[in-house]
Picture 1 (spheres, rainbow, N blue to C red):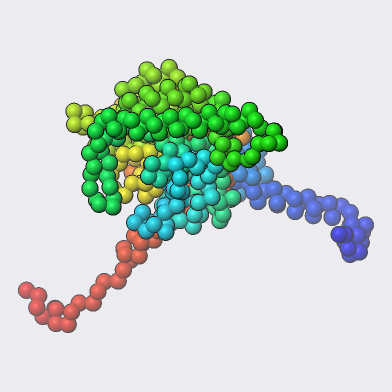
Picture 2 (picture 1 turned 30 degrees about the vertical axis):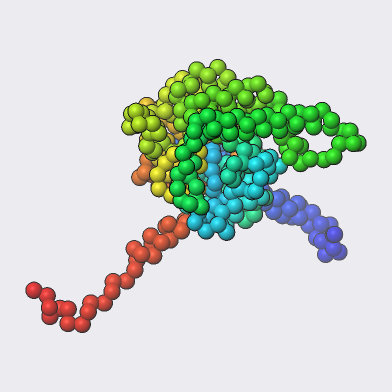
Amino acid sequence: MTTDRTRFTMLLFPTAFLLLTAALMGTAAGADSLVLEGGTVHSMAAEPRVATVWIQDGIIRGVGDAITAPADAKRLDVSGLHVYPGMLDAFSRVGLTEIGAVPATVDTAELGEFNPHLTAATAVHPASEVIPVTRSTGITHSLSAPAAQDEGIVPGQASLIHLDGWTVDDMAIAPSAAMVIEWPEIETRTFNFATFSVREKPFGEAQEEAEQAQEQLLDWVDAARHYRQAAGSPRLERNLRLEALTRILDGGMPVLIRADAKRDIEAAVHFAVEQDLRMILVGGRDAFKVKDLLVEHDIPVILGLTLSLPEQDDDPYDRPFRTPGELRGAGIQIAFGSSAGGGFGPGGPHGARTLPYEAAVAVAHGLDETEALRALTLYPAQMLGLGDRLGTVEAGKVANLIVTDGSPLELTTRVHHLLIDGREVTTDNKHERLFRKYRDRPEPPAPAGAADRRP
């Protein structure tokens, strides 16, 4: 509401008032602008070059030599440094698990075999200590995916999130980015955590159980198709599970199907083709054995951690190292996911921070370095249908960027600036704090008389 004092000012000093208003508006516009100057831009869409990057309201507005940004925009001199798109963990539990041995901090799965209506975003914990550790190596966004419990088949929908934000709403990029399906595999050996023992099962019995579960999955997809046909009928009782499943029909929402063994990958591909699903293979341990099938049906693969032991006794030691390069060489689009299988150590979300170095191992065994970087940036975004928003340093893209002093695939590279949704975010984390704490600890006092006992 305009006050009498304001009216008087407008009448007496109209020019000054307009200049003041313009200045305030300019300050507001410039406050949301950031310009990166002098860095070598690795856009993932063109050759690297020294260029200026202008960011406003969380979006890259321009990349080039002659950029017109607000005069009062914040400017960062990144000369001698490198600007890359932020990396994407393409299949992760980040935000869903804190301490694996403490059930109260694990929220990856719900009861029931079919939960297609549930989204991982509702369970993400924004204050997780794992998130800052993960982004410290340049991972700015993550596809957090639910896990199936026990014999579960459809655990729910994976959510693409920024790795920064006070609330899940702040973090959300695409809360329903893809449907997750745990393909019912033929497992002849199962581990019983109650008795802590391995149970051997005849192949015929394991095959029958897997086929029954696969038929059950087919029945659900058929039911979703009938449910969609009946949409609008006043007699139709709403079913949230079937309603969610209708989104994957006719190549709609991508479907992340986890499968590793050759026979299971083949069965999953045939199922997806017959049902007209937009399939993304997750895990894909034996994907190198069915390259032609994957190429024929244009099915991308989200691989797990490459630093793994070969699964089969007669596989060469470097089989997991070579698979990414072989798949990409065959024309198959690939990405890497910290929870897609494989790896040593703690695994799961705690292994997400090492994802760039898992890709680096593949580079040392045949994968082109630029292709490895695209597998961590552009390719997973394209798999999810979000290549127009993420994955490259181009005008119109979300400003998830990292500024480094070298390749993100190198262990010695340091991330100097990390931008998420256009905001500069700290790379400090619990690991760094503990390192500083114990590095700077005071020396303990020498015991009394120690000097006299020295030789």
